[in-house]
Image (cartoon, rainbow, N blue to C red; front, top):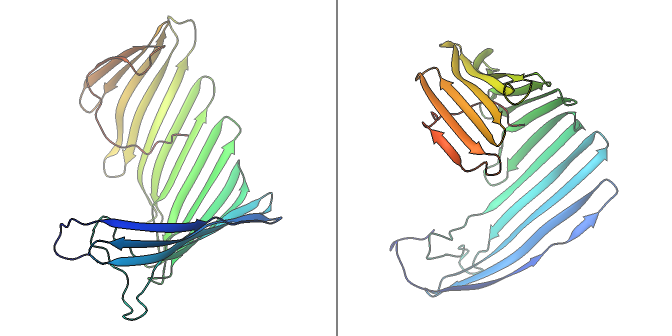
Length: 274
């Protein structure tokens, strides 16, 4: 690791060699990026390293697919002293990397479950086991769920569930956090909307945004009305907590340019983006 002084003026030069071999099989393919790098510094420091990524992508059947990835970066050692090469600069300080990751998906694009696991060979520790799934019901509904299992504490992270249901007249979306260890709901965000049909004088989209937290109960966040004003789009929003309004209008031809009155309160949401 670079030491004192913390600032230094000197030069750096080096070279690298890389190879990217690939292999194809009936059940998948192997791709890789393997390399050697040598660096020299004006302080008479020098170092070399081997680096690479090897990835195996497989599809065992129409319902089972995944990948296996191995990443490494090995700093070379002096054959006499056994010391690793040194750099006088903090900006390019490197360390050894040696880990592997496995991912598997069972199902099809409309309904599936995925598992992802890694292992760090330097620390001899596994990464958390990631578990996720998705369910799509044609164009009317989509649901997803994700959690992780922490091996060191033998606990699950909060289950993150998202969903959306929609038809030509109505839509509903939600995002929630559920504590699997304590068996309780931590938070639910929701959005309910109605599509008002008719000609452009009456048509629009009315939506209510809110959230539920066990200690606070149900809270309405905002009520919005979006309208098509022929050449313009307009959106008016009322915020319940601050009892304030936001109004924006813009040309359809230039959606990023418009007039906006009053900034929207900042925050985060669990609502889905799909």
